[in-house]
Length: 269
Image (cartoon, rainbow, N blue to C red; front, side, top):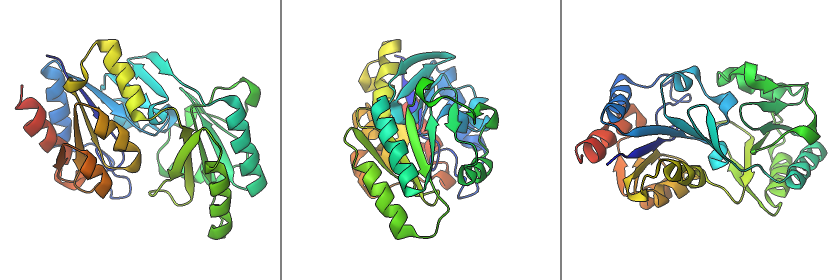
């Protein structure tokens, strides 16, 4: 029976911090072998579409779970879109302005960034973001927002932490500070997780949960790892994530994703 396999990006198949900017040949071959066997492969990431590297966009994935599960796509079709309520978006914007930190609004396919936000300009360049999908001139009242990020390059960390605590205290939202990018706060609706988008894709293809697999390493992978049929945590991942997984595979530098595909998916066919 056909299976659906979901992959986190950062720390799972790519690692910008560790110098892995391309999917390794072994991992690439293993993922393509899944498709050759009739299975479906998807990205499940906290990133918005605008922050996907060309390496990811051009690979040939069957779809994407984006913005930590708020958006799910199959091919060019959006099959699920759960924006953050506008009143909550406005609360975050007001707190960010009050606290003098930058913010961006993420959706599909565009990400919206105020003019003059230099911390984000520098960040976009470092992560090889698709700048053509970043809009600098927009009407706040007319955009849909699936995820919000706040960022600063200020060094008064205690003050910034207080600003972030106020934002995270807004009822109906959840989020965390991104450990890979200094002083970036990711904010999502409390109603969604990567698992939300994954289940929408499984429903779309009529694939039972027991035939779903997910690979991840981070905090925002916990729900999908624990709720899919088989969760696989990277050996370099968070310890509590490993406890939620059915299997722990080697880290990204040891082609852990390929090991997991070969041992626990393809060999089981």
